[in-house]
Image 1 (cartoon, rainbow, N blue to C red):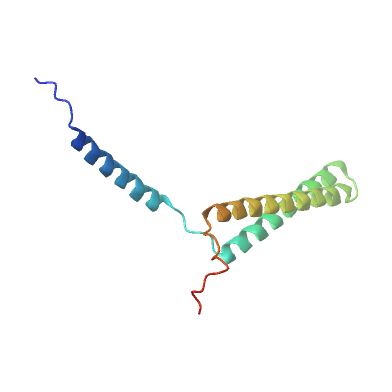
Image 2 (image 1 turned 45 degrees about the vertical axis):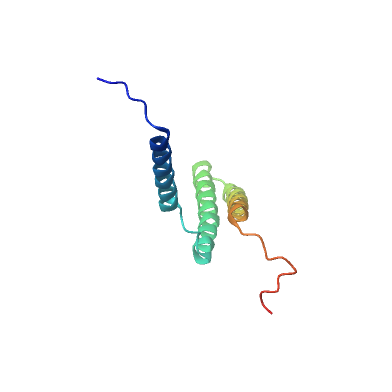
Length: 114
């Protein structure tokens, strides 16, 4: 049994094949950007769900303690605030992700349109 060391050319070829496989795998796992309609539905859903959950918790507390709709109003407002906060946070993350992947705008002296 011989202890054969790989040749530098073999290692370079192996490295090139591995890099090619990594690039193909990264391209395969890339997600397409969300559509504007999908973003709108996501924001609307987050807002509505937060308000419904807050209102439901408030309604349940009002039923449990036999109070007027104090808890309903307070929890509904807290749910609305939480929904708005989540929407703003999501929009900020989406904008940051878009800015990282965005191409720079054309230079002012670009005369491609002429």
